[in-house]
Amino acid sequence: MAYVISPERRGETRLPDGRLLGWAEWGPEDGAPVLLCPGAATSRHLGFGANAVHPLGVRLVSVDRPGLGASTPSPGRTFADFAADMRDLIALRDLITVRDLITVRDMANPIMVGNSQGAPFALACAAEGLASAVAIVSGADEVATPQFASVLPDDLRGLVARVASDPAGAEQFFRGLGAAAMSTMVMDASPPSDLQVYRDPVFAAAYRQALDEAFAQGPDGYARDTVLAMGRWPFVLGEINVPVDLWYGEQDTTHSPDNGKTLATRIPGARLHTLPRIGGAALWKHPTSILHTALTRLR
Picture 1 (spheres, rainbow, N blue to C red):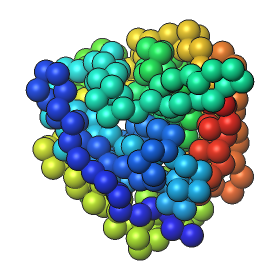
Picture 2 (spheres, rainbow, N blue to C red):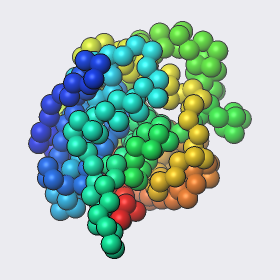
Picture 3 (cartoon, rainbow, N blue to C red):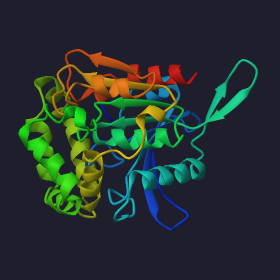
Picture 4 (cartoon, rainbow, N blue to C red):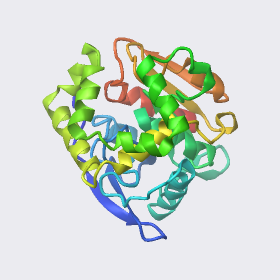
């Protein structure tokens, strides 16, 4: 089983304001568009579903957030700014799903997948009406919500408090991390089931390339992402009105204090899937189930 393969297509799209967004694609060019918001400090290079996208007819598109990889920095950007960028990208790259209903052909926005720190960015797009269905996989939860205040580990509670009281100082702190530190942090926090994936030679090379590309312009893009993800999310989860599936490995101890249980109750109609014998590497161990479920929800 191949966890990842190199992108089949990649490029940059110029937005109306002149900035560039870097993207990579896998699967048939006329497939159902699935827009991936990658995890923390990784670039468009790291996709998923190497053996699934073609059989399922999926056009997987991974996008570098501003300041990461090939995308132009956008200092001070917000979740709303990211959603606006995705709105432009969907139009410029024609990332529209055609749904054959009983009596009519319906044109719809793409499916969105948010992995790890990409989760709140995917949900922000859903709140703006830019997704037809959403899959959150090993998603970074809203750790700043008061419901989690008493259960966070001391070090994470301190970071959340710092982001709330001094976001500029917290952003400067996160700028001190680089590709090597990120890799070490992920490996040290991963159970053996995840390390089976992460230490696969092909995956390890792709992951390191994605980290190196993400920090190629410096750490500002990652730092801004982290401050946004660890603060209070400004969009209303209760107003998301498209199908949402949440996927968490039962051995995942880093992304959500309760493996998505609270998050599932905050999104109308969301379905929580708990995957056995895996931690945060669920995206690469269960791509067919994740994509097939999203396609089924779309139809």
